[in-house]
Amino acid sequence: MTIKLFSRFPKTFWTANTLELFERWAWYGMFNVLAIYLTASTDTGALGFTQEQKGSMMGIVSAMLYFLPVITGSIADKLGYKKVLLLSFGILSTGYLIMGHLTNYSLVFAAFFFIAIGGALFKPVISATIAKTTNEKNSSIGFGIFYMMVNLGAMIGPFVASKLRETSWDYVFYVSAGIIALNFVLVLFFYKEPDRVPNELSLRKSVAQALKNIFIALKDFRFFLFLLIIVGFWSMYFQLFYTLPVFIDQWVNTRGLYDWLFELSPWLAGIFGTAQGTVNPEMILNLDALYIVLFQVVVSGIVMRLRPISAMIVGIVIASIGIGLTFMFNSPFFLFFSILIFAFGEMASSPKITEYIGRIAPKDKLGLYMGCSFLPMSGGNFLAGILSGPVYADWADKLQLLRRDLAIKGIEMPALSDQFTQNDLFLEAARNYNMTINELTNYLWQTYQPGNIWYLFTGIGLGTALLLWVFDRLLMRKKAA
Image (cartoon, rainbow, N blue to C red; front, side, top):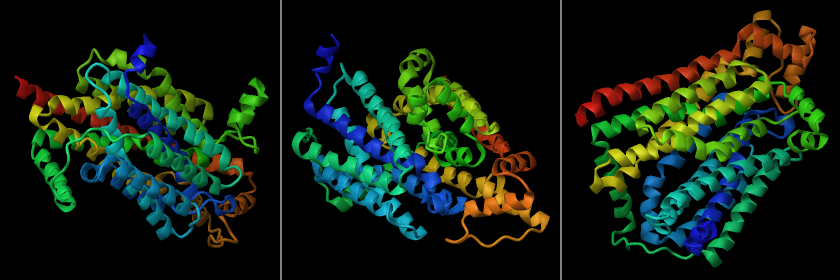
């Protein structure tokens, strides 16, 4: 029965899913380690940028990545899906290669933005291909397969990157570029252009029409208000990638986790651990994708009985608790539990956002409204960059807190440079305090309570859930009545 069902999908459907798997592998392989790569000490091969620089780069570029598909979708309709896919992969593979060889902040920013353009060209084409290669009978399982490929790529990419960066950060970018290069072969030999209505407008007019369509959709006040509220959810959600990797790297001693794995199985410790006897943050973050692969079907079955907005509210509340717990404590073992809670909230709420937009959209404007579904993710990324940049730097950045403590104690240290890195600063400070590195970290944790940043992230999530409840009560149910 299953084989017969799968055989109903055309070859292009499976090609598109493989393209998605490889693209997500490349993206998450780079993105899940990006926050650490940008901010960690230069003597580890990382770039040593500030939290403010990291937040600005990741927030602005990722915001554009989710905004541009509104425009690039119209470009694909004009030029053709196959041509745009080849253009996208050319930009992506080149961008990954270039980004891995740069150290200047402005140049890294430009290379990352270049990658975002390639990703923005890819997103609408691949979604449209899945839609055009499924029908009413198999679209549910078709998009389920597609979502599974997304999360499979999101699991494989960071795992591979985590092992590669132990040798050299360069390999992370090489592999991302190489995986994207495989997609060239798939498109050239296996991808068949789906049937589509030719766009008779010029490219300039197509882009102008796309921007006009956004304005038309956002004139619906209820729709605009809903999208604005959902920005809060995404700004909380993206802390999983923007802030949590750095937080674990700075504050969580994962040696105990490695030792526990080693007692279970030295082979297991070798797979998930490092040569230094620790576990990299991205390995722990990968639990989120693992939980989704394992439990998404179960959670979807549970929340299908709820109204979409009710499922969103419940899911956002659960995710808010989960994200708070990830920052509240500095125990690596507790992260297994807190990320599980977060994942359950994510699985309950995230898919329902798109479903809800589909339900509230006028039937004659469904495509128009669905095209705006990326806008809250764009705004959420921008806000997430601010929260993980200057806000995290002030509240919880280990480097900033150490500098603050050194100033209070009147201890002067050399400025950071290629000859005096972040790691050198911590070692010298520990020597002055007559502490080990771990003792210094515990001292700063106890003195400045960086885990209190959980109040902010959880507050944003709970505030979003409350606003959604008010929105539903005062606007949507009143309208239905």
